[in-house]
Image 1: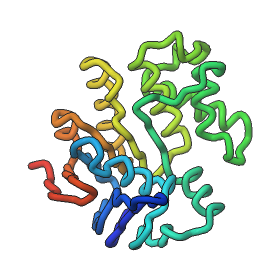
Image 2: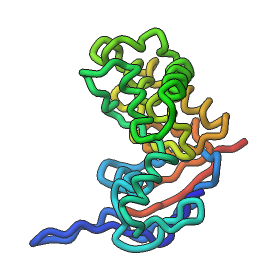
Image 3: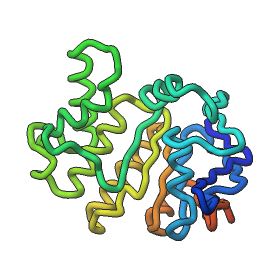
Image 4: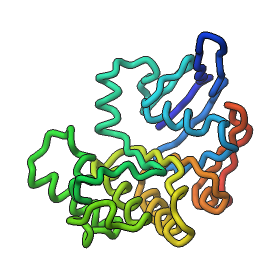
Length: 226
């Protein structure tokens, strides 16, 4: 599904050039669950942003389902994000003025489909993560774990081919973090491809493969023993 070939990312200012990623090679197969680990500042989030086409590489190739998207037009990348990618963030990124159902529906905002189908998809996504009973509440009325489940519902409502999760349990306590990881594990078991950044070795162990990064490079990649 994903293939990065010698991908680099540098940021330049008037005085200094910083290398966030240097020569990354990474292959992710369909229906794989990959955890990315490493110390703060090692390039994990930059890598995830490139995978999500939020950022562009300075060099190298990024093949998504066989298409080189590293230098694709922004309109094409917007369609890719809309139709094939789902994002889960550490800070939830829910809109307080909207109900939970309305927040989840944002995952379909740019999809052309009948209103009834959108409503059915939103209901199914909320039921899938166990927050259907909170659909009329607002984010501030939910616990952190419930907010993250709402964020996951928003990410999966469009049936994306790839889910990118950036520290999805970082703002949660142990019990809520375990619930979120169980949802991700189940989604992967049902065929979703997931790439997750995490600092938790226990949560990384739930993935099928762990990629370790340091100073903008991949040090090692290890598969979970069957």
